[in-house]
Length: 297
Image 1 (cartoon, rainbow, N blue to C red):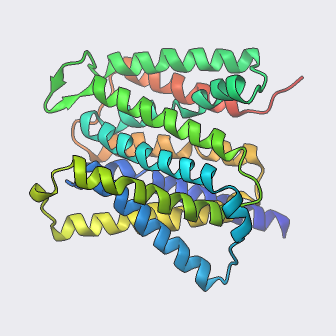
Image 2: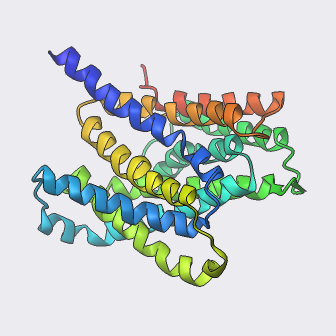
């Protein structure tokens, strides 16, 4: 019975990872501003999660949420800005390159935890950080990232935006390490609602919405990204991860970038990596995976 439940929980993590791996493709074919996409994703996702909590009769610990509200608010704001930067990265470079830049986040977590949380930086983790840095440099050169725009793309800017998103994601992880007494669903609900709300002023002040044209396809894409990529995926993820070891969840999370890169190369014209770029991809993902492996004496 335990084995069956364990497999079910693993499937509950694998499915959202595969869903997350397709978001770059959806962004590529959704011609809407990044702020608008991020705002809709947060608000629709939060509404869906709130509905799930009502149906499942989940109780909200108001006292715990209030106690941690500042941390949750800052974390949610970081998520919102993180989404904007990631969606902009998809716009300025290819999906594989943006994804690989974004998956420097685990390395940023290692370095940030060593500095801010005083966690021990082992030689292995230090080597992983160095290897990942070399990998992202190879990805940059392997994507013709010399700063010049090619066919409407600016790969260097896209990589920098992806790294910025990764830094915010890493900061969000570090903040969540000190949030105490709040359930995964409560935490996610507040963070998604905050992420969507924080994107509202940016969307209406920084983006020219007068020139935005909504089509049936873009609206459907918007709803899917809010409900499926955010509401359903996060509900499955947080509902299953507590039944698995943290190490298992961390390793399964790398299904996301692998799926994203493979699907993008298959489905999006122009989403290619040179041999040097593929070597860099292996170094980035390999270093991130090795950094998550349990240490052995």
